[in-house]
Image (cartoon, rainbow, N blue to C red; front, side, top):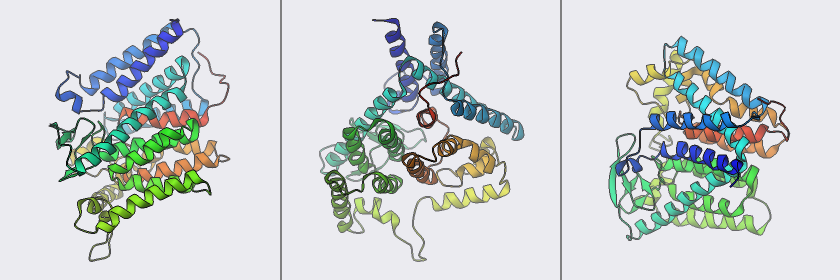
Length: 390
């Protein structure tokens, strides 16, 4: 085996250890998995080694590097403004992500990384769907319970885990902390596959499998995805639509009072005052009040946490924490992608789909999120040749 292949596999092991050992809490119930911080620090140190062995390092695209620098400088300023050292955690994630993307692109291809990640998400999606069906007909029960990252009880079914169990209805989460997370990464997988991989098999697996998450954000984003990329006068496209319509019709005709209906269509119903009933309304009102206190610079991540108010998972989350300036910086990769690809309709439409998801589940400070967003930025700004060399 050549040295290039050895370093290629070495880098991939480090990257996937970082992404997936730092996330699933179910593993911690029966394996001596170190804490997330320990995993990240060790992985970062191990990732430096290949760079010391390579004579020439090709840097990511210029726009990618500019985005990294702007975000680092911004969070340094925020740490000073709010006297909040938690912003250095963001800086660590950004620097680590820079090394990860650079390592993957130098010792392999970003497309290959995306393919493998899509397969991992696809496996979780299809196993989640099978578990959903087996639980629904009474053939599968939890193997054991465990404490989730947020302290709530979660259930392991072997094929999938979840923190959402309602009688004979589950919302599969794979090995993530909740079903919405699996749906979120599933959308990223769909988008990156559509733009850069174009694997029809994994696309079908993701679309059908992720329906079982019962995520409203996923359903909305899936509709946009189908409208933007799949609704054409072709037989394959018609099959997609027919399958989804049949599934939705089956759930809808069961009506109010049925667990499956209440977890899907029931969440779009209006109350006696005509307002849409969701579990985000109260959170959004709290976050909006916080945002109004300091609209430009926000209140600071630690300051919000010290208040004891949970204001996450709504459109005002990042505005309340980081203000207008910080929110622009958080989503700077998407802004750069948009400006760089004004002539590419597919990338513009993909950004719209991702942005629709961020209205419900804004950007959260986890390494997996940085890796996926910056992989998108890399692929969307890359040229055939890079002039920047070390």
